[in-house]
Image 1 (spheres, rainbow, N blue to C red):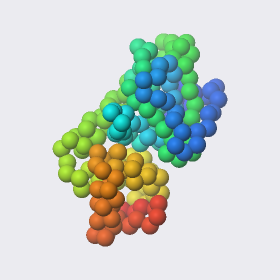
Image 2: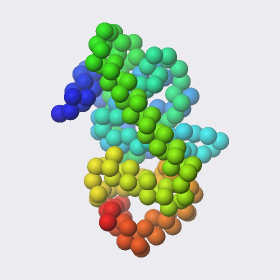
Image 3: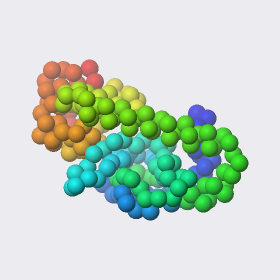
Image 4: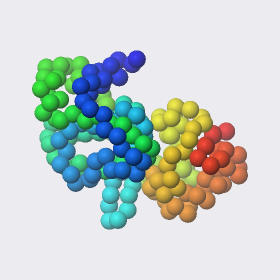
Length: 198
C-alpha cells in the first residue's frame, strides 16, 4: 500500500462508512464546510453550479478527499459533489481531525501535497475548457478518465452524456456527436457503457 494511502487510512480509520446511491448529493455548494470527506469506494463528480448550469471540474475516485482547502478556515463549500456510481464515503470533522493530528507533521505535509495535486488538476481543466476546441476538450476528458481515474485503456463510462458535456464545457448534443465521431474514426470503441481507447 502506498504511504499516502496508509496516512489517509489512519486519518479516517475510526469513522463510519456512509453509503450514497448513484445521483445522490454528497456535499452541496454553499453549505457549511466543517468536515473532510474521503471516497472509500466508487466515483463521484465535483462540480460548480452557476446560473442553472453545472461545470464538472474533477472526477473523484477511491482515496480522493474533499474539504482540504477549507481545513484551516471553516467556510462554505465552493462546489457540490454527487455520486456517479454507488459510493461509500467516510467523513471526519475538522475539530476531530486537528485534535487527532495535532503536531503530526507527516499528515499536514500530505494535506499540502494533495492540495497542490488537486489545484494542478483544476488548472489543467481550466486550460482545456478555455483554450481547446471541442474535439480537444473531449479527447482531454477521455485521456483524464483513462490515466487518472480508471488507470486503464478500457473502462466502464459511468458518466452520463450530460455529465460528459458538463465535464467538457459543451452542449450534450455536441458531446454525443463528437463521441460518435471518435468511435467512427476508430479513435475509441464505445459499446454501451464500455469505452476502449484505440
